Length: 134
Image (cartoon, rainbow, N blue to C red):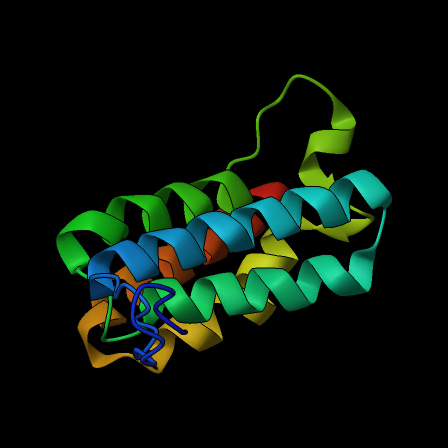
């Protein structure tokens, strides 16, 4: 960048973000991408963005006090979808519980600090599966 008053060059400074703000923006962006994938009917994109979303929420860089509630809310929606209509058990033709079991919990299991959460949801899935079978 050149200063017009004296013709000298100055270094262009990019304002830095706090790590927490960057993490919040990343999470919000991934949520928007997931919603867009649903709107566009793109199953592959949804699964890709969802896995990235879960990885970010499960990472050690996350402030657990801020993002644990968001992570639990996401897992709860997959475990107990709203019962307003039959389609709510699936998203883009994929069972929400299958997503939780096959895509979300394995990512969460990689973080030692989330082992209790993984165990709770694994147990809940087993209980729901056994109660639904005749």
